[in-house]
Amino acid sequence: MSTRNPALSFKSFDRQIARAGAQGETGMTARGTYLKTAFLFALFLATAVFGWRLINVVDGQIVSVNLIWLISGLVATIGLVILSRFAGRYIWIIAIGYALAQGVMVGALARTLEIQFPGVVFQAVLITLALYVAAWLLYTTGVIKVTQGYRTMVLIGTIGVGLFLGVNLLLSLFGVQLTIFQGTWLSFAIAAFIVLIAVLNLPLDFDFIRQASAGGAPKFMEWQGAFGLIITIIWLYMAVLRLLSASRSR
Figure: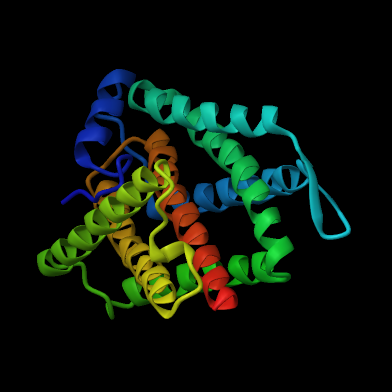
């Protein structure tokens, strides 16, 4: 009953609990997890402002980029994801560090898109929050039920998106660009599909957090849940940014 989110699986939860020696501890709640997620998202937005300022713009043109901070953010993100497997009770440090590092990188990217498409960044934030709330309401009211069929459909879509983006990245290294980065209707449709898959992953995350809480996971594992959820939220925000950019470039 796990998700494709590496942080939200019973295997990852069991590993963290074992490393912390916390077998038998309880206290995790969905409410506590959501509050910690909101805190991480606030940190993400705060450092996104910092990342935004790493791009120096004069008269609508980028004149300099602080690569040291951007490379540091990338290295920190990779390192934190690796270390998260062994964090135990210190998963809260990993979660906070991840939100901060991602904020720096996403903020810089958002700045470059804002130059091309004014207003797109603020719109993406509002749309991301609206989609998150909508997904949460639909899940909590039972409109969306996480059945095995739903889970399978979303996992297949997620794997497909991952393969597509991976192939696109590989081809780009050889100078080949797929239509997702071109101003066509197909690029818009692909971007919209990625947003849809990201949104549909949220109920999987909510359902896992509910199960982990009901199963009596330790209190500190709320940070593990928040870590996994912020991964999906940041992915959703990036997908919305791509969608809005694709709609403006047609």
